[in-house]
Image 1 (tube, rainbow, N blue to C red):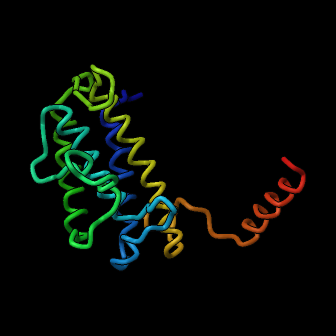
Image 2: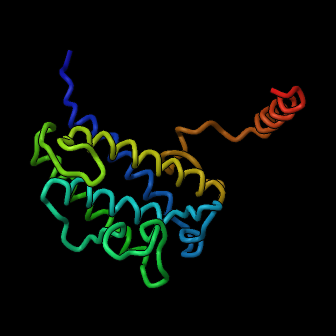
Image 3: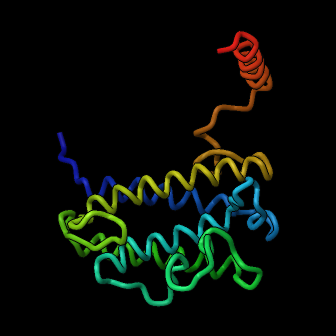
Amino acid sequence: MTGSDPKADLQVYLQDARDALLWKLDGLPEYDIRRPLTPTGTNLLGLVKHLAGAEALYFGAAFGRPFPGTPLWITGDAEPDADLWARADETREDITGRYRQACARADETIAALPLDAVGRVPGAPAGTTLHRVLTHMVAETQRHAGHADIVRELIDGAVGQRPDGLNVAPRDPAHLDRVERAAREAAARGN
């Protein structure tokens, strides 16, 4: 039996979510990666931009290791939700490049510090550890990768955690019909 390495385990899940998020942009035109697809404005490139800032804040500034060149769109005099959408003058390459840079620098912080290293995360309790930050970022990135999955499905039907689609059941129109019938029956019964 082999031992477990909690830091390595968390990094695997974080990297898996990072990769899933980025592939959601693959093959799509500029308009589709930017357009709002929910009433709150959720869009693919905005999710990447948001997570670039989160990686920079949580793994950089919080541990006294600020990331040069990676802006924190959620601080200073930025307009509300500036981190959740891309301006016309911000390119896909700029935002995804900054995300990759923030992830690489985050990985350096994770490698350099023990899980019990304490950081200062705005709005979090004093004494927040790297372990807690790493756990939070796995959850945060997976959450937004899930948002990206739904948004991408609305754009062109592509779904899943990986481009090969092997982790998704094949589309079955009969299944969709069963779900719809069950929803209507439940509503008619007053459930």
